[in-house]
Length: 138
Length: 138
DNA sequence: TCTTATAAGACTAATCTAGTCCAATAACTT
DNA sequence: AAGTTATTGGACTAGATTAGTCTTATAAGA
Image 1 (cartoon, chains in turn orange, cyan, blue, red):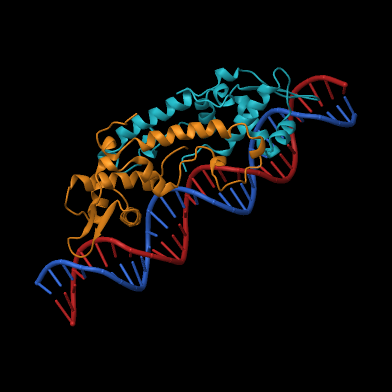
Image 2 (image 1 turned 30 degrees about the horizontal axis):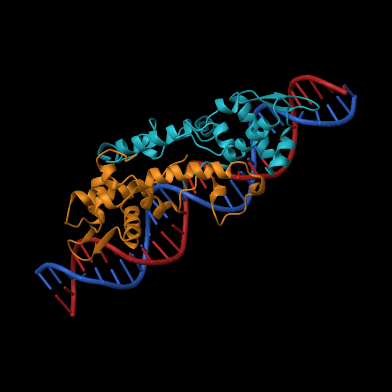
């Protein structure tokens, strides 16, 4: 359906929540309850966020996660790539996927590449700050 | 993966092929062989294309399908909607899907709506003619 | 009537998605 | 040191979607 998956939706919501808390940490439980996100799932999402450097974990009592980057510095493309891999509006655009039997005579790869780039640019130029303020950049 | 499905890829390739034949018909078999698309699958795709008025069937010997509209008149949004429903970059954007438990406090619906509209506009303003000439309109 | 071709429905395997469950580890608090 | 809070990481599952097949029926020209 040409859509971003739940992990991305939840992940963005969680990061925006963390941003509101400024320097304070928020535990997965707190975020899950506040944002109505299944806790075990959000836990997984935050692990990925940590591995990509978006947040820092704080163990122990009163622990949780802290945002390590500014909302203006994180764009939608990064988040999307983290949870869904590269944006490929058509399957044949994948560089490692040469399975498409029609490739040699495919009439749409080139124009689809252009379209793909437009979408990438749109995502790349939309920061979480833009999202928080209900804007997109382009 | 934020991508258009195979039916859409194949469907576009088939319509572009039909356009090349101008007023002549092309059978599903001919298109399938020429474009390396599984025949039974393409048959299904063309049935849908017919039901949406993109092509006209011609029964019997030397039959096949004829393009009923000009490439400049068909845009990518129509094709996409035909095979994948409306473009919804986030699940919560669906009007009938109120399952998202975070809806009341969701911080991203509004900005995602804006982003969604950008993508819709991009698809809508890309005609098959644009694709055939390896351009996008915006 | 034979042949070519579309029409339509049921069916399947593989993949992806969303989500759960459990045991382990880290570190703060008392 | 012990208990508690919280992250870590792996395996696992149900359900949906995707891509594709198979079969039977129907339409119509030769």
